[in-house]
Length: 52
Image (cartoon, rainbow, N blue to C red; front, side, top):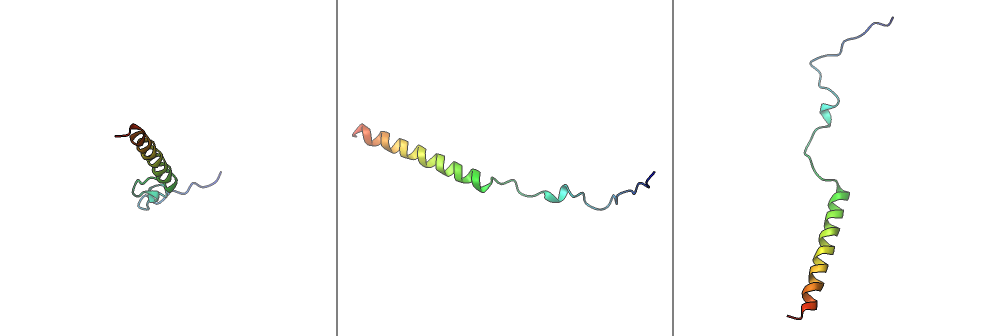
């Protein structure tokens, strides 16, 4: 039976080192900009079609 080595309780867990600011990924930011642009174009076309 192998000897079980105990981990150093003082050392930081590798999972905890992955922390940081919660930011949106570049691809999600790009998709959001694309969606906003399409919405702005649609609104512009509707305004243009009214003939105010």
